[in-house]
Length: 198
Image (cartoon, rainbow, N blue to C red; front, side, top):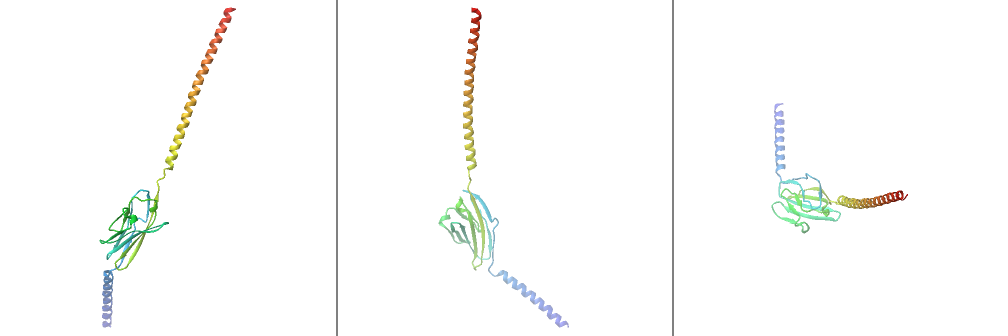
């Protein structure tokens, strides 16, 4: 019975060693790419610079490609290979900065830049992975400030009219008081004259 147990032990040992070797070989073979998008939603205002941040890792040399998709269609922004070539589209030539970790920065964004941004990281062995970032770009609306300015101008006009009306009322009151005073004085003179004549 002992020789059978030795065979089993050897079989388990050989199986364990074979499994460890296979796992080590699988980890050493080229392939495998990962991508992390730390901020999948970005809100920005017009004329602001935004960072479309990603982090990728792979065993070989990677090719990174960014595309912008909106209601106007799909536009390729940039494509580059790690430590090799960079191909920036003419539309984004002066507006994009690339980073080694796969991120890009868009300068001076406008409303037209709102939409979906797709990043594709392709390893030299053909493995690829995708990431998406949604960008919302808002205009700074000065309607509230415009409303306040118009309302302030309206109040200034109304107060000027009220001041003029008060000034006119004051002048009219003074004129009325002068006439009343003259009337009272002339009435008093007439009464005095009448008493003297009598």
